[in-house]
Length: 184
Image 1 (tube, helix red, strand yellow):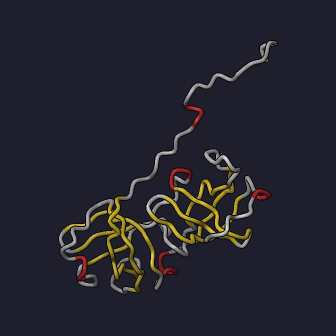
Image 2 (image 1 turned 90 degrees about the horizontal axis):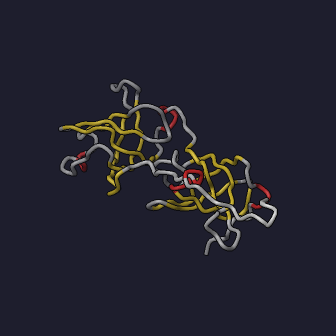
């Protein structure tokens, strides 16, 4: 079983680390700053986007308000971006920006902009019906013919649709605090 992260001394601090695992809306993150696995959920991390094992992220250590045993979790996490050309050979997760006929554009939280995705380099997607918003996994490959020098290969649909989670702020709900006899 995974060892729970010992991070009480780091509450409120910004930390860098890597996604250990992430499935559906939650997973675990590790860092050189602490031992063990720290829980991470999309609900507390609206800028996270689709991520996979090994993705570098920056996050804040927070106390988990839903925990009755004083647990901690990663909050305000976001992937560390890089120039797309520096990611050649890496497998990333992202989403389909657009796709029509035999080509489209993919995006990822790991880089800014779009990356070309064509059926010629990805015959496995020819009949898959990639559509805007679908989550995908892909590898970055050099391509001297494309505008930014790279293209997406080994594209695989993940079966999810990318939607940024909505973070609910408790300040939206009026709260009446108990007072003592003096009204304080």
